[in-house]
Length: 202
Image (tube, rainbow, N blue to C red; front, top):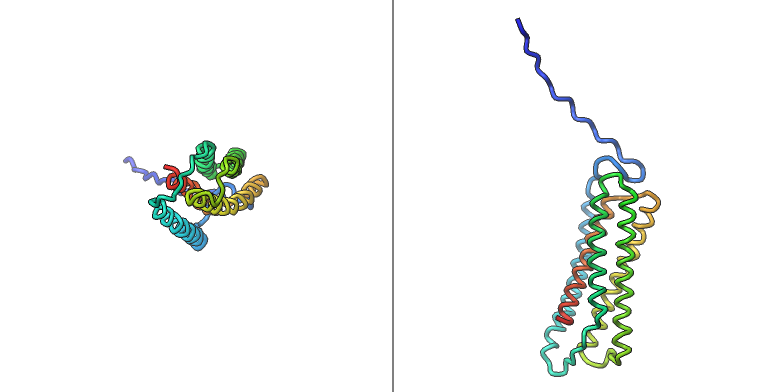
């Protein structure tokens, strides 16, 4: 008499623990409070710029607007910040594996492009000043310097934050949650610049 033997699936194996530098193993539990804080920061910055651009749109209808010709370097700076944002996402894509060099390389390249964006923005300022376009030249010029300057200040804070992440990644230390928190802020700044560019010149 044949006896049927029930085959039981093997018990699931627990993933290996993460090492003390944050690599390997399951992703850490999300820190809700930190992520909420980042979103509150993003919301506050968004409200600040929405107020400024609302005033700009109302002022643009006036005869004294005095439109400024778009500095060509702004197109290059837009490409730099968008590529930086894309590279950051590509770095996050390899974060779950053990591709430390790939993560560090992409993170560093993204930071370099972000710094390049700031340099290009400074080049746009130099170009306009060289053409004799100053803060008091026209309302359009004033809003250009105000909005790009305020955006650059927020981006400088992001670069400092970014630099700390790259430094830790070079040491082999990474916290996926912190990288995710930073990505929210960095992508927001990239999108914010596209919005400002459109409001100012398109």
